[in-house]
Length: 465
Image (cartoon, rainbow, N blue to C red; front, side, top):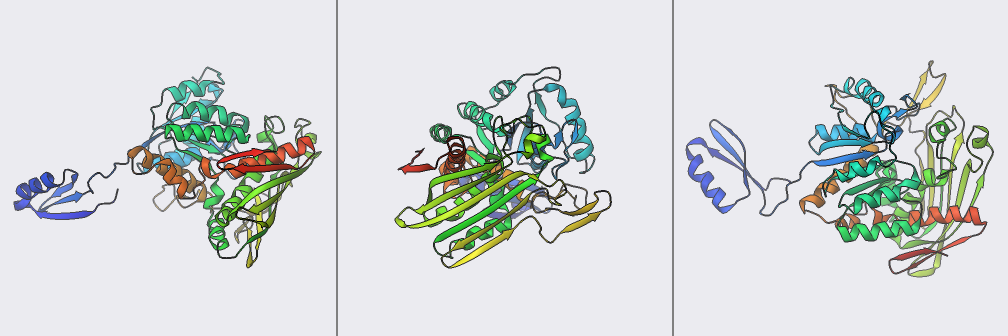
């Protein structure tokens, strides 16, 4: 909380003046005392104190720790995102106690060794300690329940687990007054999204969806500029990752989720955040998919390689205004594409257009060891330490996304804001991401049922037809 006033009181006047200030302003806080003066900070009456947030990380793999298959991931997230960010937020005083939940507790000794080697020893002794569930000699798919039961209302969890588990884990936490950050997609089914939203609102719990692309500076600037370009007309987006990612996702790819839920969720959400402010809603979805590559790499027969969604949007107050969006995602890009995530979009409106290519950002590295030219993205997570050896990635949009969640939870806990206040700010909250879930489920049903799926919105209720 920012100080309203700073008083410099000379030493000989300290006792009577300090007593007078405190009698008039009970929230007066002595910051420090030194000769020849005393510094007193005066907070506004009734101002909230932001306590550090206790956070339980559910899911121990690539995005949380960077640990995959016994060692560091081969992707651009070799030391993870969630764990590193929360360890640094603890160093900065925003986060308190940390915990981590997996299914197989026998992995934790290796995970701790990995974090010590690649974080603590790299970033000036950054503390990577955490409580772990289940025990090191135990395997328990329901370990998250005991871990959540150990939390207090107002604590928080992050959920980076297979898509099919998000709803069950999040509901268990919300029922106990625990704030929730869900990786995208929030959930797989529109009905589950709305059920979770109703429960969260009834319990006063903050649920945030980790759509970090909203905080990409180019994408957020494009969203702002779109407001001045007139009616929405056309949106095309593409996102892909190399085939080796299927080694990481093989346990669930095609079984529990698909490439559209995994990657199309990014650009569907970006498009929705750009056009909802103009009054547009999705009204129908048709989808198509390709197959053959992922299955040849050992994935189950149901695994699709690439999925394209064709979405019709309509302005809520003028049915004559329609637009079309095309969203394509693939996890069968070439092994040596040079970028971990190829990503770009084209937005066309009645008064202009926007093109964003976030794969090649003017920064490439030629490395004989890699055997190819590579394009890196330090705007997402910057892993190079600062001049003092500390982690220096606080401006990366992957970090910012998690910090926004932590700040929101602390604000709600202190009484400074309510979850609905955070909805009003346009953050990727559960209430602001319904359209994305509706489109993704409609796309899945369109492929499975070989038909176009309509989206109907009546008041605050959404349904697929």
